[in-house]
Length: 226
Image (cartoon, rainbow, N blue to C red; front, top):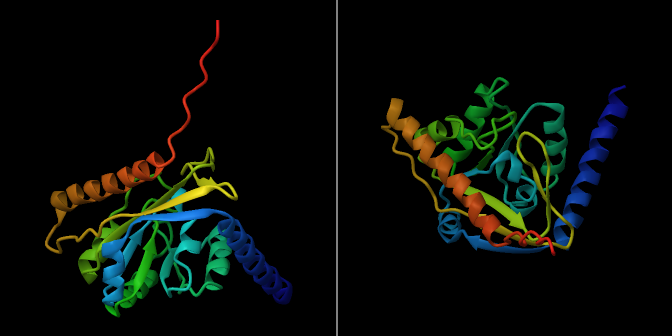
């Protein structure tokens, strides 16, 4: 029944938002970097935020109430995320590399041309993990919006054995959000030159993960006593 289905999704959004809010509020969240990103937003400049699928858990809380447009998969899992984040004022666009993305592409392009901000998960929704797809670079070329990497790590966290190595921080953990430097993509790049740039941006995101993890080094393994 449509009524029951709508009620289910409404409750999912409400309860999901409340749970994520309480979870994040319990953590001690610090921020590294982001000065140039903040300057771009103060000046009303468009930005494309890039976040690996495995490091997305903090992002929707962190960037809440800013009217950002995230690209979210039209799958059922994506519907759960969309229902939650709309309650924080996100302008959700539905699409992915494995579904028709034409409408979503034009929505994001329009948003950026108006000086807005979008979130793209460049290895989603099915991976391979931390393998950046070209779409975000082409969108940056078309709109002039810089790419801004974002990630996080935590003092206590669970890394799932999923395809993306999904990271969830424990309640009450110390969390460090890390915002990278804006990356501008030359609109004239194409072919092998564009592929080289794709690899460079991919490495930058991977290195940002390592920088975030370095704030919380793993304790040394216990030594056997004889």
